[in-house]
Amino acid sequence: MAEAAERKPRKSVQFEDSTIIVDSDGQVTEGGAMNGEKDSAASHATGDDKEVEEMTDMFAGLAKKKKKKPKAEGEDAEDVLSGLKKKKKSKKPKAETDDFDAQLAAVAGEAEEKEAPAEEEVEEGDMFKGTGVWQHDSTTVIPYNMLLNRFFTLLHSQHPDLASSGSKSYKIPPPQCLREGNKKTIFANISEICKRMKRTDEHVTQFLFAELGTSGSVDGSKRLVIKGRFQQKQIENVLRRYIVEYVTCKTCRSPDSELTKGENRLSFVTCNSCGSRRSVSAIKTGFSAQVGKRRRMQK
Amino acid sequence: MTTDIQNLKSFDPFAEAEDSVGDQKTASQNYIHIRIQQRNGRKTLTTVQGLPKKFDQKKILKVIKKKFACNGTVVTDTEMGEVIQLQGDQRKDVQEFLTDKKEGLGLDAKTIKVHGF
Ligand SMILES: [Zn+2]
Image 1 (cartoon, rainbow over the protein chains, first blue to last red):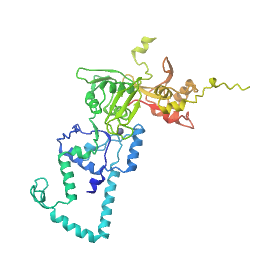
Image 2: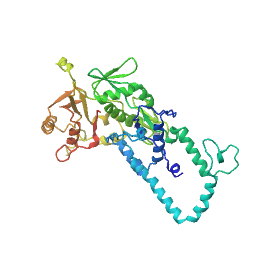
Image 3: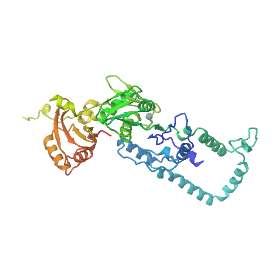
Image 4: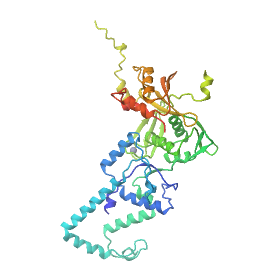
């Protein structure tokens, strides 16, 4: 119960650690991942100060990099690469309430006594199978607490994705980087990532090229071929910056937004959840030094 | 008579206002961009674009070269003006140098944009 009350909308940008993609419609087959979702949903109650921290981190351009922890089970899917969250901290409030509860129980023991047996009396039956109080034709009055509990239990087990995200948690499959020969990198799942971000491949490509100071092409299966050698982590860093700059809403931090071209070459990011609109600058390539053969050609 | 002709002042009273309003063109031109480019193999190149005109790029380069033990040149680009090119990934060092008040230029960190991976 306390968990349910504490739960706050969680909006974050993160890359999944596992190759299994948790779809927004809740299609997860792996049990481990599901548990991870559940656990973290409970521990994700964000304190106010933490939210601010998160924000500043985001505005700082995500300078901090969090090293991937050696996988602990369940954490796997939740390992937030962007380093926006601190797990330990988020668990604290819960412990406090527990403590508080204990104190309450000690002080107001009488009230507890009255309530507790009443609850135990009805706490029978399996809510999944629909036995005991949960029986279809049962006439016992089910207390609100239990109903709410049932709701969340079922939600977690049946639709973990809905539960974990008061508003959708923003997950992006990790970029898949392959090496082509010695000098090129293939960014294989760019279109999938773009679809998730609701941005065009071209826009993201443009940003990538500008940031990496390189160029490239798109191959037959819509994969991006980038000149130069890049690791997945590096691409991820750039993508993260793209998300901060062109995807997330600065007001409510929701990543669910649209990029539209307004009048006179200005682009706007319009948030789908709070409706705020902000202008974003066009991607600028800037100075790029001539490298290799072309330098000689110019002379 | 004062020889204080407003037009000859290099100070632009609207500069900051424009910046905060978000006139992208002027705003982005005020930024100092530190970029990285890959060359062949593991070699990289760092470029510093948009340093304020009041600084002598050659002198800055000289200091940087000595300080970070790398080679470099000043390239004049038709669009971007003078750009400092350095061998290797010097982004961190350059950024620190630009913002350092004692030994560097003491620039505002907000005006510096570091690009790359
Ligand atoms: Zn919003």
